[in-house]
Image 1 (cartoon, rainbow, N blue to C red):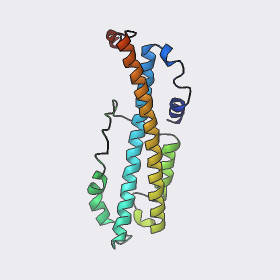
Image 2 (image 1 turned 135 degrees about the vertical axis):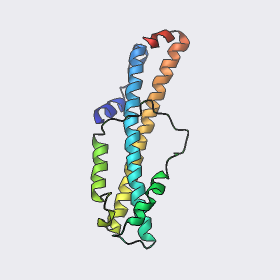
Image 3 (image 1 turned 180 degrees about the vertical axis):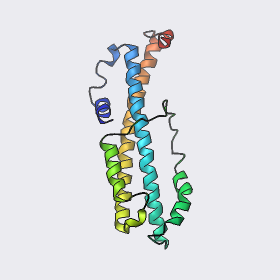
Image 4 (image 1 turned 120 degrees about the horizontal axis):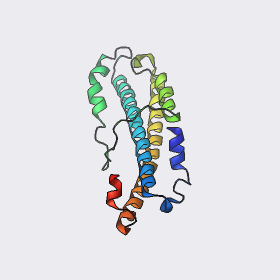
Length: 177
């Protein structure tokens, strides 16, 4: 994902956009959407892990035994359902299959998650849990920032396609080929 993301967010991604064939502009839009789908999935994975870690922090803060996580496991449906409806209008992902998550952001999630194994949070002390919660929150903000940039790219490409239809440079029947 790194190569695609870096290329899409590069300053020269839109150079000559007006001169490119509409099929190529659509392909660029599809590429942006595919990377956004991967980032969306990664973000949800980060949020889920963050919610579990903060749920464990909260549980311990209310007197829960570090090594008895049965009540954490019991609360998982509630913890993980907390962010089902994100703020804002949201966007329907055209392709719901993210594919393999690879690259520096996925590697960072793995590195952070390895510090507090999700299957045995009792192995981590309070300080380690707090640090992991902070690191996951920072990663989520970074991934969200990349998604916003991709949405801007997608909107620009969609606007170019729309402009071409309005001006007659593109014909609707061309999209059916």
